[in-house]
Image (tube, rainbow over all chains, first blue to last red; front, side, top):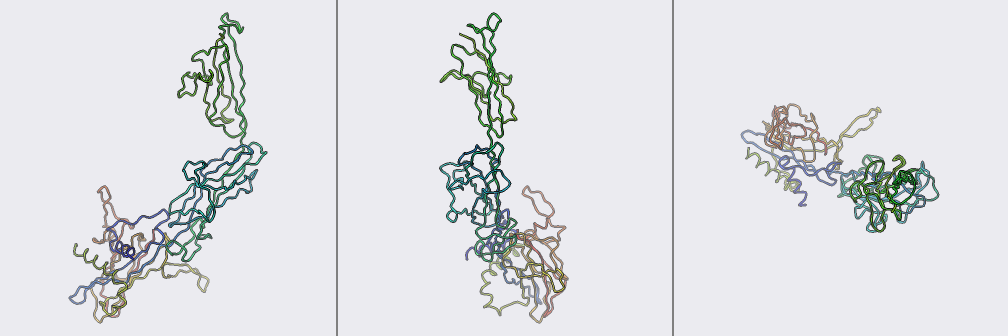
Amino acid sequence: MSRSVLAGAVLALAGILSALPVSAAGAPAGLPIDNTAQVNYTLGAATLTEPSNTVRIVVAEIVDVIVTLQSPAVTVSPGAAAQVLVYRITNTGNGLEPFRLSIDSALGGDDFDPVPATPAIYFDTDGSGTLTPADTPYTPGSNDPALAADAFTTVLVSNAIPAPLANGNRGFSLLRAASLTGTGAPGTVFAGQGTAGTDAVAGNSGGDGDATGTYLVADLRLTAVKSAIVLDPSGSARPVPLARITYQVVVTPTGSGAATAVVFTDPIPANTTYVPASLQLNGTPLTDAADADGGSLETAPTRAVRVALGTLTQASGPQTVTFAVTID
Amino acid sequence: MHTGTISKLVIGALALAATSAAAAEGARKGCVELKTVAETEVEYVDEQGQRATKLVPAAKVIPGTQVVWTVTASNVCDKAAEKVFIDNPIPAQMSYVPDSALAAGADIQFSTDGRQFAEPASLRVSEADGTQRAARSSDYTHIRWSLRNPIGPGQVAVARYRAALK
């Protein structure tokens, strides 16, 4: 009661107090809106003021949800377990609404069907965007996410990848969120089932939403070809002491997908000494110190040149690393 | 001006306190009885198969819906009520629909604060930075219908506007 009196007082002062918050979908479900008109008039010499009755309307609930895929196509290897797609479920209605989640990995239009893990749906409890032991598994009917208007939750879907598969094969997996109040054509009324007992009405989404993620089989292979040029002090190519050997290693990515955090290392051969500042990547000198340029001379556990190549795809093309040693 | 604001506040509070008591009190009324009705417009197909609209009572409304507010003033005395004006605050969470205020034989003014009423062209509002601009219909907080003629005994005046639920 105290709340409705307060709301009434706010309305009586409309224009003096600022409006209550409005969600993206509009006024919050269950909010009572009161309206009282007033008449002023004179009757002979008397000036009179009378209020009208107060009419109350209640904001009905719009049931709306949007599911969006947060991850790009996930590159996977055949036979890989626990490959994770990231989705966001957003309540685009105007009231608190619980949603039932389900997945479908047996969709058409793809090359293979991912195999849902058990359990397959997790809340991103730790907010990491990846599946970790801290994430809570979803159990339908037990922890259906209840989202306030405009609120969202991040959900992880885990599938295994069957084998064998060919490079470039795609597998689809769909996450669906459906309002527990009901789903139906936009405009469908669920009488009395909305927030605070008001009516609920299916919004543009019809009360449910889904998004489809893609697994892409990518067997990116890296091949390395090493060659050496020997230059001895006399100007010929004999591998004698003090002769300089320039090594060239060409790393070529082939296949689909991407390899991330690729690191090239090559030990300095026994009985040779690295020529300082001889390390180059694609013709660009790299310093020997471990710094931003990605190239360095490692001293432990063994002496080796190291070049961080980052993310490679077939489009990256061959990567040429050169360095030089002298024969002891 | 201040007196007017205070009396409005008192009336607003009394109206709330009196909503349930009003029915019992019943008999004590002035000469002009004011009745507010909320309706929404729905489309239907009439006997001739034509699309038509009708107003149905509004109780539960989804955001975006236009509510038709109708205020009826009935003179229940045997004397004419003169210099009649009807004020209606546009509910918070609702936005006045431009050009929707109607009333036969009335001058319609708006307010953005419930105190100063004026024709739309001369209404101005202050921005947060202190500058002034012409008021938009979404700025309106109150509507006033000033009847040009008295309401005679047994006569009725009707004022109406639309406001959309935000």
